[in-house]
Length: 265
Image (cartoon, rainbow, N blue to C red):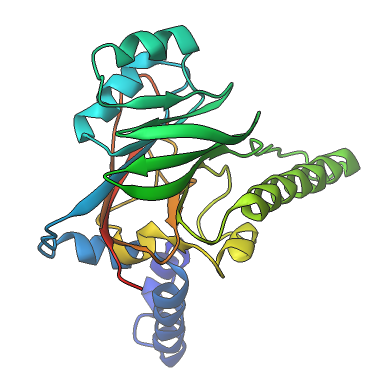
C-alpha cells in the first residue's frame, strides 16, 4: 500500500495501471480481511438453533473470564488460564457450566465434560451439550520468538526450533481427534492466519472465520490487531455463520466469538 502511494506521481503511466491491477488481484486472493469487512455490513443470518463458542486468552486474569461470559457461550475456550481455585469459585455463580481445568488451557462447557487428554499446551475433553457429543480442545501452542538480529546464526536456529515444536504440538493434537463426534479445536495458535501449520488440519477441520468472520477479526495486539492467532476450527458437523472479535479487560488479545449452525450429514 505504501509503495502504491509512492507511485502516485506516475498515475497516468501504463506501468502504474498495470502494477495497480496486479496489486489489486494479489490483495483479493491473499488478503482475507476484505471479505470479512464486506460481510460485516450484511445482515446476520438468523438460525433457530445454534452453538456459541468463545475463545479468550485471559493472561491469567479472572476479569477476562467474567467478561467472556457476557457472550453466554455454550463453550468457553480459555488460554493462560486463571488458577483452579478462582475458576472453581466462579462456577458457584454459574452452576449450569462444568470446568475442565488445565495448567495453561481450560474449558468451560454448558453441560457435561470429562478429560480425554491433557498436556501443558492443550486440554482435550469429551463433552455433552444438549444431548450432542463433542470432542473439545483448548490449546496454546509454543509462543513465537520474534527477533531482529537476523545476521546471527543463533537467531535462525531458534526460529527453526520454535517452528518445529509448534508443528509437533499441533500434529499431536490432530492425531488424538476422534472421527465419530463433532470436533471443536480452538485457542491461541501463536501463528498468523493461513500459516502453513494449518495444512494438517484442512482435511478434517474448517476455520470458522472463513465462512462466518464479520468485520476486522484479527486478535493481536489489542490496540493494533494485525494478526489472527486466536481461532476456532470445527469439523463439518458445524457451520459457522457469524464470528467477530471485541476488546476484553486485562488481556492483550481480542476475544473471539463464533456461532455455529448444525449440519445434517
